[in-house]
Length: 500
Image 1 (tube, rainbow, N blue to C red):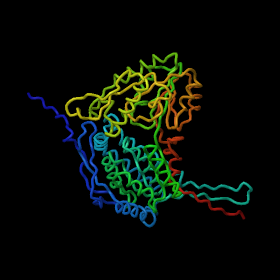
Image 2: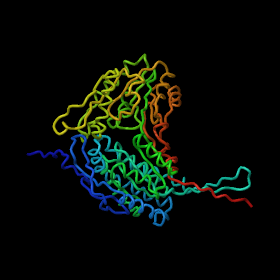
Image 3: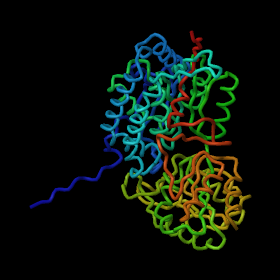
């Protein structure tokens, strides 16, 4: 009797919904690009091209914004109620979940995120739509506010702000766009979206889910191209609101444009977050949560705490624990469910991480594991892999202690007392995430509250869709998630009336 086995999938036989495309999604249909150029999509694990998308031009942007503006001002979307929009959002969530496999595999081929990471992208995106659908009462409840002197009252109305330009990065191309799209739709806005150049194909699957959920034409539009496409969107006269996640330098450029135009903008930018290890921290517990909290997605996550602050009395033990934990985590093919560390997402980022490692060595940091390109075999031999790296004996003035590396690199600094730890944690231009590992809950909370950052975890870190997420200082403007994230897509009107 012959035993049949399922053949191993190869990159060429994966069921990917989109590979080489020539269209943008405008006014409810996939339309041929007016631009003549294309962007190649490269698998960073093999450094080979497997897809392509069109480079749009000003005509494509104008068509997309015009469609969104028409849908907002005269189309059926402008006549829907929050309850009706929430029902559509729930259908979108269901449709996304039916496309989970295609989303995961496309995402992994685009940016090298391990399937252990991307396999949850559909469920998380669906949960974001479902959460914002619960905020209907925020929009439909009467909001009547009496005058303090008792002479009248004000009706506070919450109107959709208008056409929104949404721009997402390459590290989490699905969820960081959905985080903007879901509240915009519930508010009653229409959108034009642009992905990062390295990851343009995965979100087309979300657009398919939007279409299947019967979202009216023009409400959701999607164009692809380089940064100049984003500039056109940001500055378009019919765009009323901009939301961007990405690097701080690009965020500054967008903020300057929006300031000139007096256009509301939400910016979620870079980070250099710290994990403070208290004297009484349980290092076994910390080890179990280390990669998710400090090296998630091969270190390519904006809020993770890649800068560990350890007490002098336990410094060597912390270094040993971190080193052992990182060294033991498998690196390899991101299509393998066992892989923890994949490749850098693109060549530019790969080179940037290696430059940071060279600067660390030159400035006196000690490499306890990793520290150089990874030598993999077969089809992965040309991939953009860097060994997961731990740098000890790092001091605050070193480049790797100050700059966002955005790769599989952890730095470990030494502190003398809790006040010194807080000072080191706050000695940064950023302020996005952070963690405090400690057994004394009261002291852990005190330290967390003293950290100047938008979010802090106590013995773990995770984003909560119901709580605001945003950065301080160079980490951004405004917040996403929660009722506060919905408010960013609203325009407020007060109607005053006297009392008889």
